[in-house]
Structure formats: structure tokens, C-alpha cells
Length: 436
Image 1 (tube, one colour):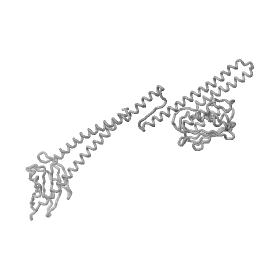
Image 2 (cartoon, helix red, strand yellow):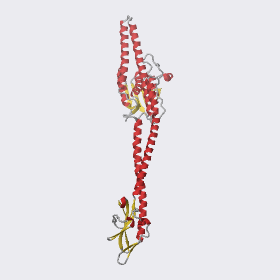
Image 3 (tube, one colour):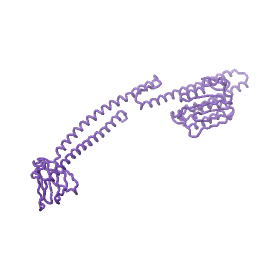
Image 4 (cartoon, one colour):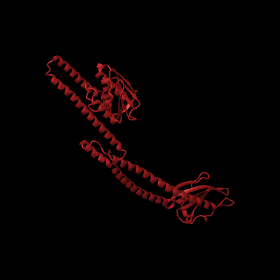
């Protein structure tokens, strides 16, 4: 039963059946107990009326007067009976005619109640109690036929069961209608997913229950992350292709170079640049590793991997890296996004640093500082523009910081640049709760 609609309907039907069955049983028991209590109260009153007619003479012989009882005790098989037991003598009401019933033996002065078969196919509720009068002990048992009561109760139970079944059917139909209308927006999501697959839309629009809306929001967030990742991958491949194409064109121009020494020097330079470009992309792919979007990622693990990569890329500079980040600090986000963000910032610091790069965390702000020449104050506002390069003689595409700015904006983080004298300080301030 994989259908959500069927599961809800089945759960409601089972729950209602249990509740209605409990209601049917409890109401039947409550009515039966109420009517039985009324009968027992009446029998108690009749028992006291009969007690008033009990007399004993000087020899202890029993004399019984029934004038205080209702006429039903005189009518044969009327369903209203009594029995009085004094020692071996038992007196029965005239309504029993030639029949009798078993007189219970209560203990002490407590009332004893029982049920037993009676005359003419009747079923009796018997109320018995011990009394003492004129120093004589005797037992009075009053009985009432409860067959009509049981028949009426059975009719009530049958009617109650019928109404409960109709009530159950009505509730199931109403619930089915509510579920169908509530889940109808999911059909719209299904159609939107089909349009998304065909490329007609880039985001899902949803108007429906609040419980399902977070799923659509997370799906849209994932679509945005994938779109940005593809965009950055295309830009990265385009930048790499452009850089390689430029250097291949330079190699082609060198084919006409007559100065062999100059030719060898230029080829070696271009080879080093191409190798550096390939190493950079290979290192970036290697350190990203397993991608798990929307997970808490170990910040120190990311920084150590990026620093290790930059040490390899800039091994000729023998840079000293210092990471001041507490162990166990986690950052909520996409693993590749975070590698791309911090990778571009640390790579930029490594490119311009003279001897060292310092990475520190203070609250929700991660700062990356180098001891390089820094950036002219007038160019700080342009440093994240695509294609901007502070020094045309330094290798690079001018896209790294622009990509970092885009990723930071995606996470609601603020990216700031300031001259550190010496060097450049880059600060990334995340929203509260992102860093733990």
C-alpha cells in the first residue's frame, strides 16, 4: 500500500471502527447498568415493604402479610416475585403460582445480587438480603424478570450499530474527499517536474500544504545549487580551454622563431604554465572528493586539504600556512561550493603572498591574510569583477574572486576585502547558525 491517499483512508477507517466499537460497547453497558440500578432500587423498596409485613408469634412461627406490596406480586407469572426463607420454611409470592426459584444465601447484612432462570422461560434479576426481626433471622429475595430489558437493550444495540455504520461511511467519504483535495496540489508538482525535465522551467512553483512546501523549497535549492555548479564548471572549462588555446597559439607563433635559445626558453615557460593549469584543476577535483549537498562539512578538513594543494602548487615559494580554526567546527553547505569558495580565496592569497598565509576563525567570520603587496585602495571595489586582474603580468583568469563572491552570496555570506599592510585580508562572514 504505497499510495498516501490509501494509507490515510485505511488508517482513518481502522481508527473509526475501533472508536465506534468502543462507543457502542460502553454506551450499551452504561444503559444496562443504569436500568439495572433502577430495578435494584425498586426491589430494595419492595424488600423493605415486605419486611414490614413480617411478624413472629411467641412460639417463633412466621406470619406474613403482603398488603404493602404492589398487585403484580399476586398475578401469576407477572415477572415480579419474592421468596422469604426462615429456617426451613420458605414462603413464595402468589405470582410464582406453582413454580419457585433458588433463594441465594447472602453473607451478613450485605445485599447479594445474582441472575438465574425463572418460570415460564423468564430470566430473573434477584436481590437478596438477610434481616433480623423479633430476634429471628430470615432472608428476603426479590426477583424481577429482565427479559424485556434485555430485548430492548438488544434492539438499542442493533439500532446503534446501524447508525454507527452510517456515521462511519459518511466520515470515510468526507475524509476521502478532503484527502483527494488536499493532495491535488501534488499533481501540479508532478506536472511541473515534467516541465522541468523538458527545460521549460528552472524552478518549481507550489501552492499547497505547509508540510509539503519545505520539500519543494529544498528541491528548488538543490536545483539552484546544481545550476550554479554547472555554470561554474562550464566557466572553469572555458577558462582552462581559453588559457590552453592562448598558449598553443603562442607555440604556433614560436615555430617561426629563428633564435633557438629564445625558442627553448619560451617553450619551457609555456610548458610550466600549462602544467600549473592542469595541476590546479586536478588538485581542485581531487580535494573536493565525495559530494553531499546540504550536509555539515568539517571546516578544518576542507582548509587542510586546500592548504596541502596550494603547498604543492606553490612549492617553489616555500610558503608557511597557519590555520587557527578549532577542531570539530562544521559548516552547513555544499561540499563542492565550499571547496570552490575557500579554494579561490586561499589560492589568491598563496599567489600573492611572500612568505606566509594566515587562516583564522573568529565567531562567524573566517579571515584569510597574506603578506604580499596587497591591493591599491582604489581597486578594492573592483577586485571581485569578472576578468579584473590587479597585475596583468601575474598568471590568472581574473575569475576566481568573482566566483567566490557569487558562492558567498548564494549562502547569504558577506565577502569583504581590506589591505592588511602588508598583504590583503579577505573576510567571509556567514549567517548565524551556519558555523557550529
